[in-house]
Length: 444
Image 1 (cartoon, rainbow, N blue to C red):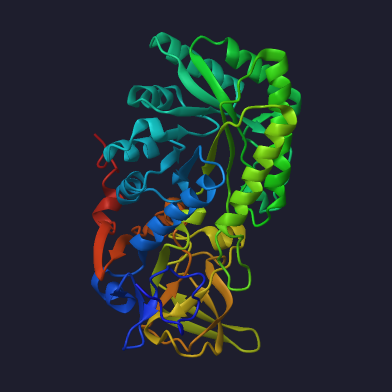
Image 2 (cartoon, rainbow, N blue to C red; image 1 turned 90 degrees about the horizontal axis):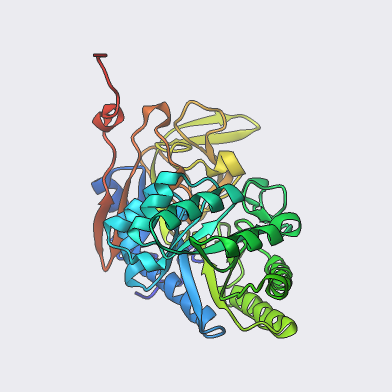
């Protein structure tokens, strides 16, 4: 579907975004105002075309430079059965980080050999479930897990293919809460002090088949330099381990963390730029250390789902604080998107029913929840807002829904998938009955 040239926020809205004759925002050929009326708000809307286009772009850009590349969707950005099925259809692999995410993948028969199991404290039950499903790779995060997994796999009479996750001590210059490649992180085995021991033990364990090494620097990483720095450091370590212990680096992952554009003024690097930086560093490092080129595994999550999703809210009350600001409240907030209060994240938005009206009013968009910090957007430039208007927040497809809660006993929102002018409900809105379904009362 061709995008209309006049649409605002074109770089942060889904690829199919447009404006119809009524002046309403459309996504996937569906009128956003009508979607809000039909399904209620808050409502999360995913564009099928954008999801698939991003999958194909990552596969094309990386494989054109390094043919043996696996692109694994980082499921923690957002995973539901529909998304898992789309990833499978597009030939993607997928990272899961819990038994729950594994169960969602299994519910749509996601190919087990294309699953990678991450996490810093996988339970014995989760690891056993993963092996029983035939998980492709377990990414070992620490020595405790290494021993636990070896015992489970050996007891099942099999060798589980694994990667070792290392902390290379490189700062990706992102938010402290999402930085994982530095030494002061709960994730990964410190490469300098403990990496050699980890490689040696993994090679010795009968239940494990060490396929290679993994690092993840953090997210979102708007700079290319951290990848260009991390890859050579890990390859130098791999060469040393090959010489000392016979490590065969068949597979290597620099992780994910690829940024999504949230603000018009802060574009993220193109997929091609990430691909060029990583594959060039990999090829050069392997030449330098006389290593055979390994399979490359990259893990985009946010950069697949982020732009594909928008959040729709209905405007309610407003409050003017003379000389300070105007607050406009919507019917969602931190319960469905904790990122602004947690990370100070910023978003772009437009009024879905006035998509082409000039943004001439400065307001702060407040949520409905009983917290002073429940503010979705501060000092946002928008068309004039009135009660009943539908506000569309862009780049809402990643890390909002997975971290949603029932704070203030609020039902979590519905989710729809749009394509070719049709909207498909892929998760129904929770009900009040859902909120009490797990309570045990009266006491027996």
